[in-house]
Image (cartoon, each protein chain N blue to C red):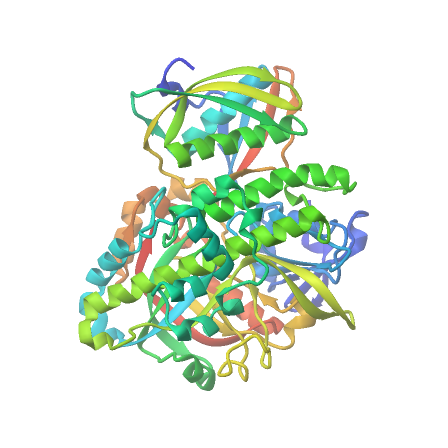
Length: 143
Length: 483
């Protein structure tokens, strides 16, 4: 991600119909790219707008039983960063991602606008699938 | 793909998917609905999700699906399941992220005609006094120790701190406090989220609404409940805020390991569960109760702010108590209850997600004045449409584990509602119909438009005809406050 305008771009994720909550499909060439697109989609759906400064750098380390559990833990971690510190991620660098561990460095900026209360990212029908061009997943958010 | 042909019609209002439908189903699914509502339910993945629930281990009876059902995550919203205690499971996803989301109704002696000139001011005052909206903090910041007290005491904590009247507590499900809550089972992160949010409404479908009691269907019961035709009532719909959301998030994540450890096969990972008598199951139950008590205290605190608002607007006309509590009920909760199921007395963990407990006359957990009539059930409609006050029945025990519907139920996605409806125009339409609207977000308002929901009166007719609730009064909205 080069700048915060990337956070509201639609490339790599799309909102899909869900009766009561929110669902979106994300895709990327690698698992790392998929995780970054999932973060972008989350901020887009929340209607997040970030200030220019000050920047805050945070290290995120998560453990899970597989890639899906890491993806949900990752999104819930970003929701927590917003709620606890009012931070939205401007730049994300994924340093390590395997089936059990995620390590990332995120550069956060204060959230100026956050339109939607998202309770959590859920596991509902979640599966990260391999595609011809990389990976994709559909995520349901409880709102 | 499930179609109407997959159902066996038990009667005009109960439809069954037998266990023969899917080899993994442990119990059948019963849908309470008329034919049209059944077709609505088939319009999204609600029934597929109900079949998934019926595949969970340790369930007894059947999975009961209410007519206001809609697609959720894991368990559909409007679902009830009962698992055997001991031996069965408990599932955080089958309770939901907003633990003890629920509704409180208070009745006012002020009549609509006298109130009419002040409704706009009343809506503004409620909006100002009752914090709402995304990220809004409450007026009662808590230390961690005080938060623990809220978790243990629920509505009683609010009484001890001057936010409740003694008479409110008996008119609250479980008297506003679930026994066995253990705040030490909630994470540090959950407590961080919970400390600043007590006394807040939140956003999404949560609301405060002033109504006029438009029609009474059971005069004797209405009199006992203090409902007078033509007078005002107030509804509060909210839950345990970030505290409950975080507890569910934490346990859904922890239980991913538990299902591996206990060898539980799941049709959907959001239905993750653990044996109820396991360390993990008991920890979740104790944390869930802490969140439930937080929610009781939260609605109680909002009731205090609503009373304050009524006094500000109506002065002495409001009297000593301008809003008497009718009842407060949960619609996202797991509870250990005794039920007669298939002719046998059983102890079960009843999970209600988007469904309301609705016990009938004689239930000992009611205040003495309600014991002859049964437990009040509060069914909010969509914004701009009617709401209902019902009573539980004794016939619903074997039908739905003493449960009934919780609202209107969505039929249109939020995405579509936002595309098709403009919040500002909707607000104008509602104002033209005499409904004062105060909302923090116009797109948020659009998502909650009446068009996005089923006809609540049709839902109520279905539960009434199915014998799982009894009509008492219909309310019409006159002021709505949304986050």
